[in-house]
Length: 227
Image 1: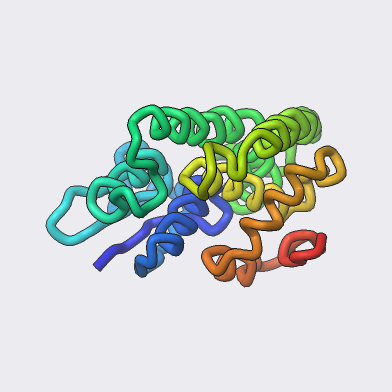
Image 2: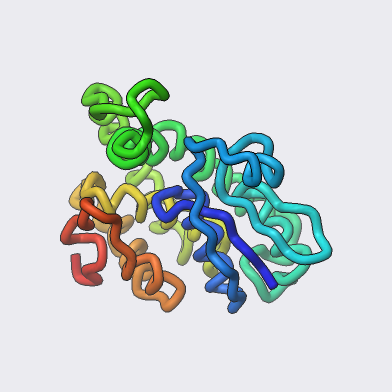
């Protein structure tokens, strides 16, 4: 039995949820508010970040990239979301890092923090009104990431090659978190938009698209397949 400790708005958690769905794996979902610093969760991951995947008989698996490798080693194989050829795997891992690290630091992380997490964090612990300058910079950063996605897809069928991989899921997960907020300028690159529409129409996306946050409804483009 798999258990995923996650937060619905966490882009890294969304990536793991998409990967589990694509691999046909079912996990019990446990929502974690990382800012509460709960002792039981810190015992699973001292870093206090989501996601963490737990499977009976195995140590807790913390972090999106580590979970992806764990699933590849234990479930994915050559038929999963990682290519069998080592050179192709390098490109998948490079793009996973691009979105899970770079895009998160420059765009999805700041926007989710400012517009969602800070609504629930006590003022004395860093909560309060969103910082408009941080949000403005993050929104601007999304543009060149969209252009990069478009450039990749114009050369390939999918981001890392001729089939869907972890690279596509990581990019789509981070974009979906921002798209919920209506902060993705989809008119920036039509190729990137078409690529995202392809992924968003996959069965693995259904659960994410059906979820809403209390007091914060999704943007019209979020669940619309013809956005």
